[in-house]
Image (tube, rainbow, N blue to C red; front, side, top):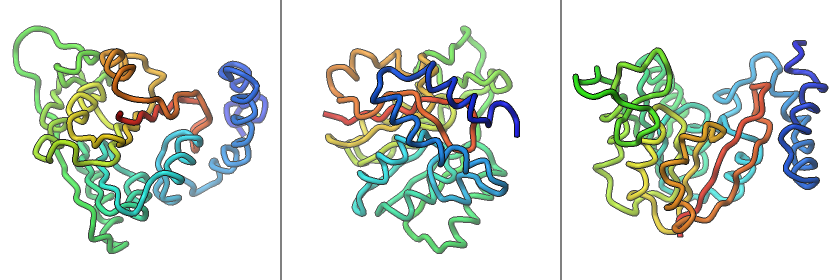
Length: 239
């Protein structure tokens, strides 16, 4: 077993990230699940679960209802989880190979309430330099995707009515841009789930809006399955 999948590494992260005693105890309540997730053959698709932190998984297990309409930027195990739980699931993916694999898995399970969109990125047009931190630039922070525009990808949600979705998961490309496009389409009382918010530029452009129009349901570093390093999944409820 590698050092990063060991008990000492988990303990070190617990001390590093715990904000208080209650958070420390919560982290340790997931140690068994974290350790077991490294077993051969385990991944989010085989487990049919979202690849987000354990506390975020637990929150969704408790709060996703059978009448929910869900939109997700980036699909995988989360798609299968929502298909089991919700009334309607919409997914957009930018990778053709993965989209084909995911579509075949969903079809093999005979889910009729899933709709998938494959939307490839396009070359960035000539013009001023763009920043992945600016939601209006539709750019990914991944270095190998820096010359591509994800505007069509992020705008896949645009044709849907305002206040239509009960839950929107942002776990794909150009996340600040996806958040920007998602906001009008989330119902009052709806849940906005943003993964990997340890990257501060995901939330920074919306700080004032989130403080005034949303309540924070979850925003803590925590263990995540299949991955040694703790990350942060943020869940916000629209007021």
